[in-house]
Length: 263
Image (cartoon, rainbow, N blue to C red; front, side):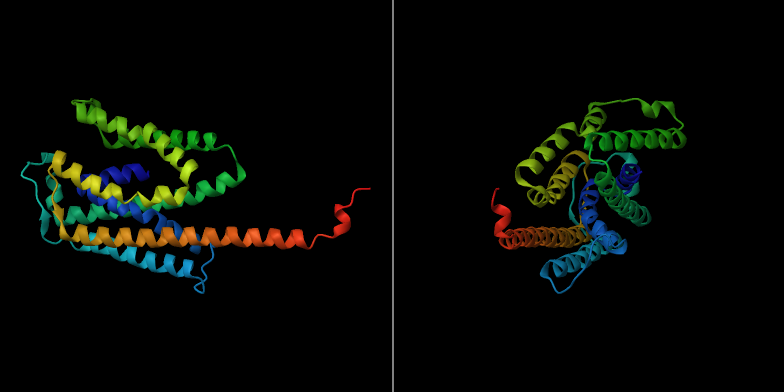
């Protein structure tokens, strides 16, 4: 379902905006974790303050992107595909932004459920398999209901084939998994906003997209909020690891000496 909303949102807006709003997923995940009481918020600690401020900044950026379009900053001379002419209408722009926000919200809900499932079932491969299986079934069912024209299922050019190949994302997931194992989640998360720059460049060159001032301001705020939330999470994890290490040290020092004597 998140992928379907994402593709519909991109159709009404642009890949650049979709990439920018995608950085709201950690923010929504943090908010839902607070609401569901799976994470505690203590404003006495700087990590909680950073996550709270980052959340406010990111949501403010999302509101700017949604409600304020502004004048064009970067325009392409290339004529866009007729199917993207809806991009010029403010009403469809708003609908697209809302669909992208729904995508982030559903992805955040999915992250929380996956975390809960992973605690009960340690086999990550089975979780990924069933996640992909049910996602494929939902997409196929909705596509069959919404798209009645059989010719729409045919691939007509190389760009469509390339888009499907990229959507499979086997290589991307492999690289991300390797980086997670070698350098950790914070290192991987630091490069996520770079996707906005890549989306701007590719949308400008291949799709003839126009970059608007509202998107620039909102995306900048979302990225700032994303980094604040990520830093707060990393700081919180570092503090927890330090406290755990200190507790183990104190416990070992309080161990009676007679337990170390072998009879």
